[in-house]
Image (cartoon, rainbow, N blue to C red; front, top):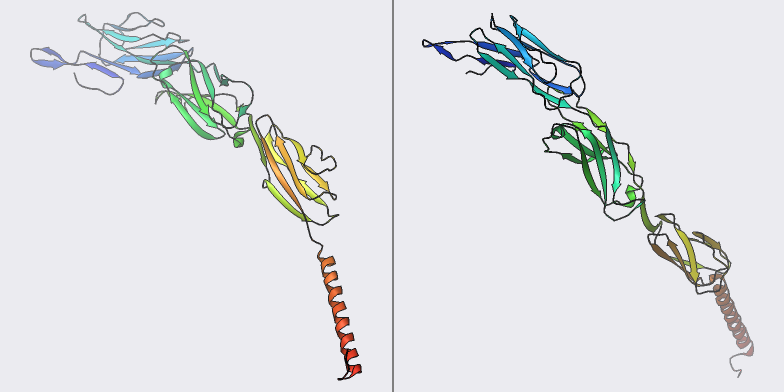
Length: 337
């Protein structure tokens, strides 16, 4: 036997009286078949033998039986649905020999559904906690040609493939493990099921995509500015305490102080011109956690009053000095005071 081109099948070593002669030659067009479940197929089988006894196709669907005195025969099926079918083209020779060749057929089925769902949890996710998402691919074949790819936005984050040799449609799942942060709140995940069917298959390879899965992430409050603020104020100055924080769910606020003050309320901003020196605590909290921010109020010295007193004292000293000098000059050098 010698090798021929793809799709050409030959048996050429029959020895008669020391001579080698060709006895049969079969060629299929196309040489290999990749077809979607339920589609029609048509394959021609021909021979270079000038005068065969007959040719035909053996198949569970579309069999032709023996057709005499032909050099080609067509296998045609309107709707191919046999997952285990192995159609064979055969040729009968005048000497009574029969030769057969099997057509390579890959029957595929695109998934009915590709979907994402959380695994073993419901509701929002909590920042820093591990979770799993499951991508379900239903009724797909052949699974050995399947890849499942996960995306976060437009970023590819995981790809799974399968070694199952089952020909018939099956259900497959892919698991993605994530540990979300606050930056992931609102992130969109999706998964794609792709059948890579080789050079004889459709191009581009068929892809089924899930709906986007939007994750909701809960996280504790974080202040927009530093956690401690110090103020130096004179009586009557207006001050604003800013306790604004980000968090999910939205934080609620409470204020505490050791000073007897007006009601500071439950808002993140507090403005007053009558606060006493002391410390003021604001707590931002939600179901996930809480944070406290410290405001320190100090009294500022009134420098205007201070220097006015110093100036008065200096002025008085100057008056006394001048008066003493004048009095001494009038009294003369021999005066006794």
